[in-house]
Length: 147
Image (cartoon, rainbow, N blue to C red; front, top):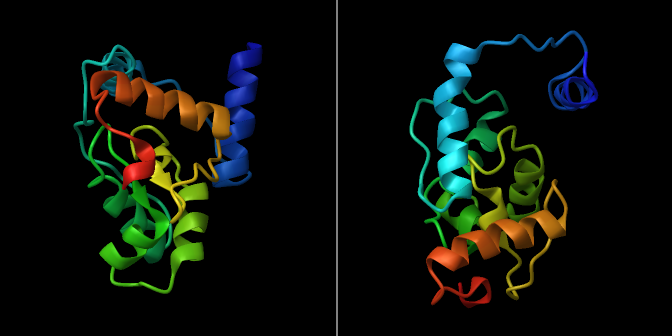
C-alpha cells in the first residue's frame, strides 16, 4: 500500500469508523474523477450524479442545502440554518459541515461566518481560500464577504 493509499485509508476510518475498507472501483469513480478534474480546471460549476449520503437526517438536510449555494458565491451558516427551517441551529450547521464526507462535491467551503469572515473548514482555511479563489477566478465580480 502506497503512502497516499495509507493516508486515504486513515481518513476513511476517521470519518466512517473502524471496519470500513477501501475498495478500488475505477469504473464507478471514473466519472467523479473526471468531474473533479473539470472543476479544478474551472470547467465545471456543479457535480452530476446521485449521492448516497450517510449521516443523520439533520446532516443530510444541511448537505443538501449546501448543494444550492452556487459556484462562485458564498452563504452564511445562518443562511443555511434558515434554509433548512432550523434558524437557531447555526452551530449545528457548522458541525454538519465539519462532517461533510465529500467536500468540494458538497461545497461546504462556500459557507462563511455571519460577519463575512472565512471561518472553519475541515480541510483548513488555506484550502478554503484556495477553493474560493479558484471559483472567483471564473466569477471575478464575486466577493465571498458580500453574501
